[in-house]
Length: 409
Ligand SMILES: NC(=O)C1=CN([C@@H]2O[C@H](COP(=O)(O)OP(=O)(O)OC[C@H]3O[C@@H](n4cnc5c(N)ncnc54)[C@H](OP(=O)(O)O)[C@@H]3O)[C@@H](O)[C@H]2O)C=CC1
Ligand SMILES: N[C@@H](CC=O)C(=O)O
Image (cartoon, rainbow, N blue to C red; front, side, top):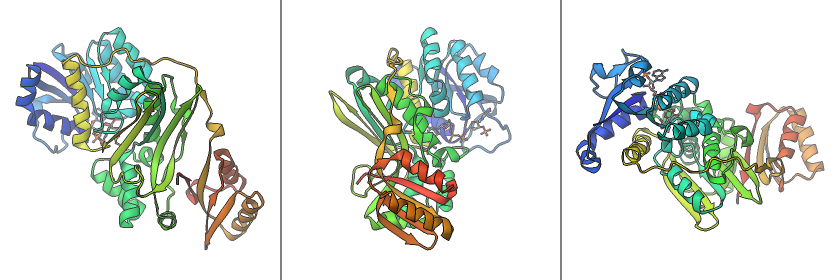
């Protein structure tokens, strides 16, 4: 019997218990032994659970799990940063394999935890931390051994994609759509991470570190979210026969790379434009294999639990990558030089609005201006992203009073 200590019994933890229950007999035949969740860490003993669990299995004391000699694998699906990190580190130190869905922890401590696991000859696997149910990490590790990875691109956050799709396709308002995604279990405990792009940035940091073989830090990725998008933006985007997606994009050429998270306006019938609701699409380009695309449910109970259990089975069957590179190749980050055509909408009082219009006309930044009462929207020529920051700071525009999307059309 393989005993598992499960940290967390929320959206993902519950899915894990259910899949193991559903597939019990099949898995037993496949791996020749039973997978048993022997203990589960939770916060609140009195909480009503979606599934029936024997009370004896539940604990609020992590030491009961990590100190249990019979537990071989610890699955961390409790979320948060500090406590989860401390528990994962302790589990590895005590000789347990660890599987996690926690992108916050993986993004912050990927190298340290991977090297600790190697030192202890244990696995530290995190397939579920990027792309929910999509098997991307394993593939990328494999392909990065055979290829120079030149580009990684993805719709990597289910919540924001769900939100944008609801706004575009069903004319729903931002707050309403966010509530729905929280109810469906896609959003993080604090949805700021989803809508401000931080979750996408963490996932891109993980993918680029593996793919580009460099320690790409979260701070090296420019990040802009979707929280200030308004109905007027949706109308403008639709009038261009386009849709909008929060994309993470990184390209590497001659040891120089860009890495950005930003809303991108694309044609509805393009490959990324067709990815709707909580689905994710991740693509990467290798110099030998060309472009590979991975599409599927990017969040939610079963898809994420599925990715966790793929890692668990790989551990049991000793079928996981141990020696993929996490080197530091000292690549140059050239985000400052990034150029693009941008859609910019500002909502300003008349005085500032007029001054800004004069400024962008003088500087010949735009050839298309759309004004509607306080809202001024324009499409820039190809400019440095930095120039947009200059406009925002020159006119002291508050975060909630502008929205920016890059055009990829
Ligand atoms: N939801 C999704 O679609 C996806 C989530 N993830 C990641 O998976 C992880 C879990 O997400 P999700 O299942 O949605 O989270 P939930 O908030 O639904 O569940 C968290 C669970 O962990 C328990 N928990 C939280 N903090 C503690 C603590 N300090 N001590 C003991 N138990 C604790 C909670 O206990 P209690 O029930 O008693 O409150 C709860 O059972 C996160 O890292 C998330 O980023 C990754 C991909 C997709
Ligand atoms: N909140 C995340 C959950 C999965 O990683 C998302 O919406 O993608």
